[in-house]
Image (cartoon, rainbow, N blue to C red; front, top):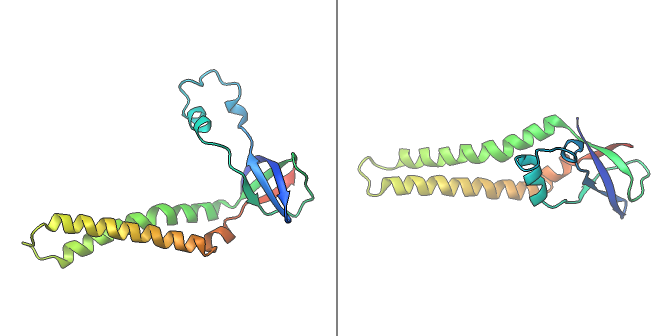
Length: 145
């Protein structure tokens, strides 16, 4: 399990919402000007995330939130590898189907690659909207700190 320290920001309808706390290493470091972690953290706003919880909590409690690393790895493969495979498959299929002396063959191959890439992203989005990914990838509160 991959664990992260978080703070409970709201509780509504038996649903706990948490925000990730700032990493302790980023608070007092003297290399803030050249640190990419600090730059990214300052640009991105904090986002509240719903988590599953069986523990009685109140707003402001510090909790340890965890997610299964195997699930995270499989989801990463789905989100990164599937569109890449679709991109190359679309280009390969167009190259295989086109004749050797077809006019503008390179444009057809590039268009087919982009179209298959976009189609794979759309299919992943549909799978996510059908709660296939959201249901299984929910973080859980492990313990109250």
